[in-house]
Figure 1: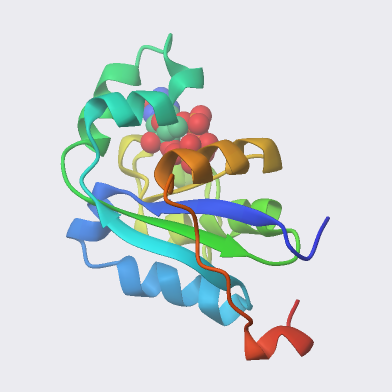
Figure 2 (figure 1 turned 90 degrees about the vertical axis):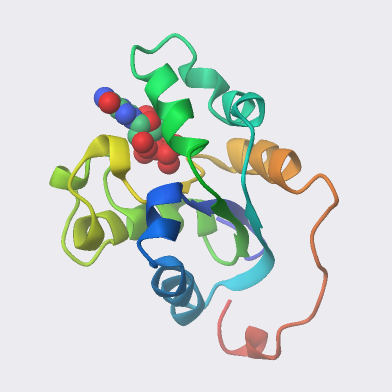
Amino acid sequence: MSVSERTYIMVKPDGVQRGLVGNILGRFEQRGFKLIALKLVHATPEHLEQHYIDLKGKSFFPGLIKYMASGPVVAMVWEGLDAVKTGRSMLGATNPLASAPGTIRGDFALAVGRNICHGSDSVENAEKEIKLWFPEGVVQYTNDNSKWIF
Ligand code: RTP
């Protein structure tokens, strides 16, 4: 657990099309995380294959890449206490049917193949994903909230 831990959060194409970007972004802001990077990207299949490289052998992999390349995504980096684990709990379980109400997937999704958002599953993967999606680097700034919220 670290104050400066960062996680990569991405609103998937269905979340963008359904107008859920503001809601998802707002949850991370309200929780007290610091926004470090944000952009709208229509990713290529090659880029998405890199992102999901660990799933390459899975039967759902081609469908996953097609879904993720079907429209723009919102790529974000959030920083704060236990950001990776807390980000995952805010997203809910991978299968929205198993996601608790109050989580992003539990509030907005039903199908595993249309589950609205992504969050890094480890600090190591967060670092890789941040480099992949933000090769230009992220913004450094002091947040005035930092003495109240870690
Ligand atoms: P994500 O990487 O998108 O945050 O999801 P995750 O860690 O919760 O789940 P993971 O196992 O890494 O799967 C990545 C994404 O693949 C799609 N998926 N489809 N059985 C299926 O059809 C299936 N299983 C997974 C989901 O979009 C999942 O988020």
